[in-house]
Amino acid sequence: MKLDDILNTDSKAAVSPSINAQSMLLDMRIKGQDQHYEIHIGDNALGQLQTLLKGRRCAIVSDDTVWALHGKTLCQALQLHPEAYEQIENWGQVHNETLCLSPTSNECLTPTSTECLSPTSILCQSSDTNFNKLLSISVLPNGEGSKNLEQLTRLYSDFVRAGLTRRDLVIAFGGGVIGDLAGYAAASWLRGVSFVQIPTSLLAMVDSSIGGKVAIDLPEGKNLVGAFHQPKAVLIHPQFLDTLPVRQLRDGIAEMVKAAMIRDEELLPMILNQFRDLPQNQSKDSPAKHNRSQPTQQISALPEINALLKRALSIKKNVVEADEKETGDRKLLNFGHTLGHAAESRGGYSVLTHGEGVALGMQWITRLSEEKGLSEPGTSAYLESALAQLGFETAPPLDFPALKDWVLRDKKMTESGLEVILIRKPGEGYVYPIASKDVDVFFKVNTPDLI
Ligand SMILES: NC(=O)c1ccc[n+]([C@@H]2O[C@H](COP(=O)([O-])OP(=O)(O)OC[C@H]3O[C@@H](n4cnc5c(N)ncnc54)[C@H](O)[C@@H]3O)[C@@H](O)[C@H]2O)c1
Image 1: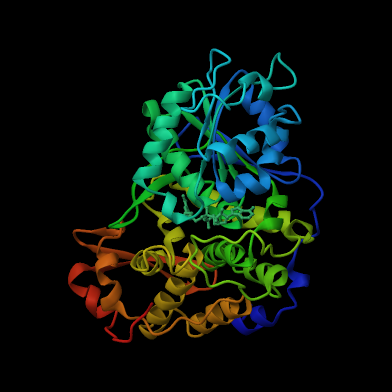
Image 2: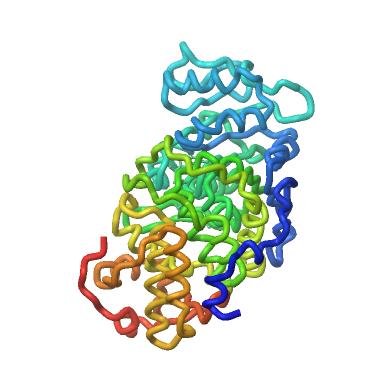
């Protein structure tokens, strides 16, 4: 299909029949490992929690926005007493810190014990085979600013107080920040405890919750401290998307566009079909200042949403299954990320969201590669037109000197040079090495200020 045809397609025709009603299952099998895990997508996905927790205790990690909006749903999925959520909420308002329950007694281990909850009041309704010990609930400030050493240390302290052992389970309940942070805490705690991903943002549902990359940021750069630690399962409940503000929704859309560009040309018309008419971002606030009052629309009611989530996830699944540790094709998932991370880091994570950085990075690198004859003519216009229809801003000219320090600190940089991901034509990404001595030449130098 020609590029113009794809962009002009009434993409309804390109979409597979609706299968929204049922839950869907993807089975993730990492090459060369016995271990595999399931990704459940759909309204029944949270029903898997009880099976996963059988005989285990758990520590929940979430952020304040997600917990306020959806903590109750998680409590229900855990089959806690109906009043449990209210009790936990009231407790949280009084103390604004981690709720930490004693695994062995009815004591609450939080420092201010006078008003604390009795653990028995939030135990399971059924006391027999299912899990019946909620060890702790750590609710962190929302936003990228929490993906740091300070919050990691806080989680370790919570785990100590809660008595989290290797037999127990961490539940990462939130967007990509919580998934990365709680996942890294789980990876490093006692040399590794199991964790379950319950992603609540679109970005986390289609990208960050699968694949096992977990990390925290340092002031010097994004994701510099991390590990590969695969979750025990990923449970995707699309109804969580109904409260996601449009700016955060677009972050997930950017990662879906990335997936389409590197591997699946036909995914882009599907994305456009579902998300072309979204309202403009209502807030240019710092990404850290999350406004709960700007939900997008009933995303979970979109006819193809489950199918779309599954298709986008399948791309990442196939890539990661073949190359868990990013020695080959997994690098393709970094399309747009080298320059995108640099722009995001340079803004101190408070100017651009992750998806906005990636959208800029994809545009810059594709412009460059087309100018150099490394992409088919029209690829850059195709990408930029799709992003514009999805409500992304057209990237300003690349100011490489302003980003260079951040790029050189990127994990993709080695002593011999840098590997960038280019798009030969939509649906076909490839790895392109740039020798250290050629980095400046490749990223032609411009001057206008970027952020
Ligand atoms: N590990 C990986 O493979 C991988 C891949 C891509 C991105 N990431 C990481 O993911 C992070 C970005 O993830 P993100 O965009 O989900 O950010 P996020 O976790 O900060 O979530 C964005 C905002 O949306 C809010 N939110 C989440 N779910 C919500 C819901 N259902 N309703 C209302 N608000 C909700 C959060 O509270 C937060 O304020 C970055 O740190 C990035 O580095 C990791």
